[in-house]
Amino acid sequence: MARQRLGLLGGTFDPPHVGHLAAATEARAALDLDRVLLVVANDPWQKTAERELSAAADRLAMTEAACRGIEGIEPCAIEIERGGPSYTIDTLRRLSAPDLDLFLILGVDAAAGLPTWERHDELPGLATLVIVERAGDVPPAVDPAWNVVHLPLNRLDVSSSDLRRRVAAGRPLRPYVPEAVIAVVEERSLYGSARS
Image 1 (spheres, one colour):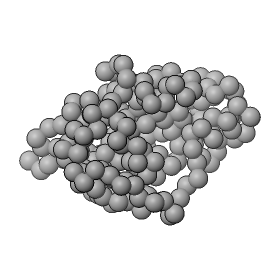
Image 2 (cartoon, one colour):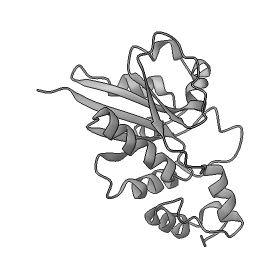
Image 3 (cartoon, rainbow, N blue to C red):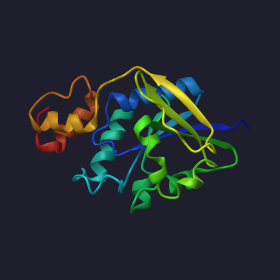
Image 4 (tube, one colour):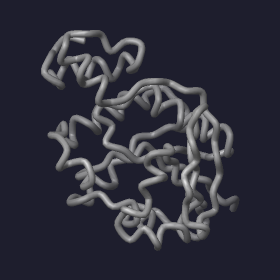
């Protein structure tokens, strides 16, 4: 049986946007991955002190909506189901299998922060690190134990924090967020407004 190639793009996804989807689809195509999972953090422990997060169920519903109709890109609730703080090491260990190659997909900022992650020294043996780099990004120095792939991607200047501010200010989410995600935002009155 052929080995499976599985990509993992973790995040808060509050909300998921076209930048997330572009990174996932580009990684899948460039690295010949069978699937890419958008892993929704339950408690992103490095962010919870910064701001109030949308409920995990809402973030998962938006991520499910974002993935709808995109072949090979799937939502993943493994960290929500596990509960507690979301540690990538636990997710990689849970998904590891003898017939599976794992690819951890990160942006430049997240890759630069790897030394602050829980049990970061155990991560390189579990996955290949895929660093998504946009024009002008400076690749971070990473632990030489990693097998690293650098993946260039066209710059999409969109961030979840900007999108939350747009909704609160009554500005549209289109074209930065898929229509199905906008429907969830409106249905659940997320980010301080039912209109986007």
